[in-house]
Image (cartoon, rainbow, N blue to C red):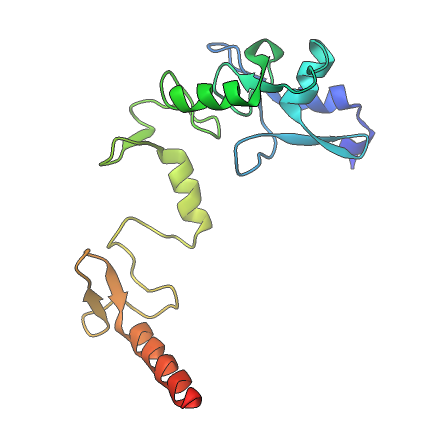
Length: 188
């Protein structure tokens, strides 16, 4: 309620944290799933980095979009933004997708403690992974779950391991078979 009476500038600065090492102005409020930040200005939802660029620098030229030179999507520092064509923005993103990136898409630092390297060489942010696991009903690493998605226990009588090493619930498999044969009989 109080946020609605504050000016857009006041709401902007209220939600910014300046990273003194990188100079990024990191948005601390809710982020979209793609890592970008939005907020409302005059009942219209706008990208925060675009709004900041237009307030502090200038209008974004027609036909151009803003590229984050720091590669941190929720950075709103207009000095870290450059108007470029869509093609240029995409090519920079692919080439520099991981090179020189110091933070994950949500702004967590990629350091030795917070970074896990997959078998394919991809970096995974441990903090993001932990948040995801908490959101997804306590899903843990492969093989560590105690119950299946439907709540059946993974015990010796109800568990089989497939060729990939995944735990599977025999009770759920029986239910799927029953449903299949019931539908098949209905068709015949």
